[in-house]
Length: 306
Ligand code: ZN
Image (cartoon, rainbow, N blue to C red; front, side, top):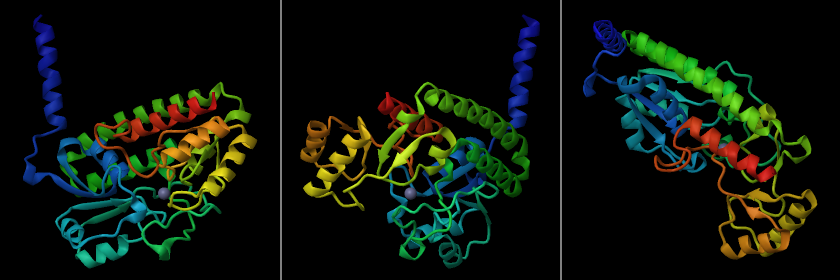
């Protein structure tokens, strides 16, 4: 019993040493460009950091433009973390306009980026950046996020050296979780024949996912940009669904119940739930952390192929 108490005391002491108490005012102020980066910073920084996201959960990065309020938030921050690869076309302008003198990092630095797809993707951060050289959606591959985590850990240590033991330990633990996640995603598709690992998805955000886990994402035909498709467009989509023998399609811009009904009646396919691509869900939703998002998408996709 005494040995047990000693052990508990020892564990508590180690925990205290790992994370000295930090008052709200002393917290490292981090600005994350969007919700997925925000979650990664929180996973590594824990209670030593105070994270503000410029583009929050369930919010479309494609429609974001920085506000004067964002510039003010940034000016008061110690660190800004962005994805890079052209995802935040506005970042340089915002940093300059705000007078920010802190540390700025690109989380994707060091990954092997894929070239931008041929399919039209809505502009990230304004029309001028519509034709990126690289596909920015690198977080859709877990291996890349391990690099993100290392970059974020190093950046936190650079701005808050006393927190190093905390950041090192949290990053190591989180990297282990990412290893497990990777194994889980690969296992989910392993028994599905290659010929069935195909889905129709509207937002071209899953090229990294497709490459890494052997899933083919087809662009929907007949339903273009962000507007609700016409009846004629839906007829084209129905022909494609039949030809490709799809049972589920993921088309974000079809919200009209009559069109959804028509697709299920005429093509025998369901308009599937939302795949989370560029934003996490709200805290109560099914994809409120990066790991939950990847799990959720994997489950939805694998179910659609069965
Ligand atoms: Zn996107």
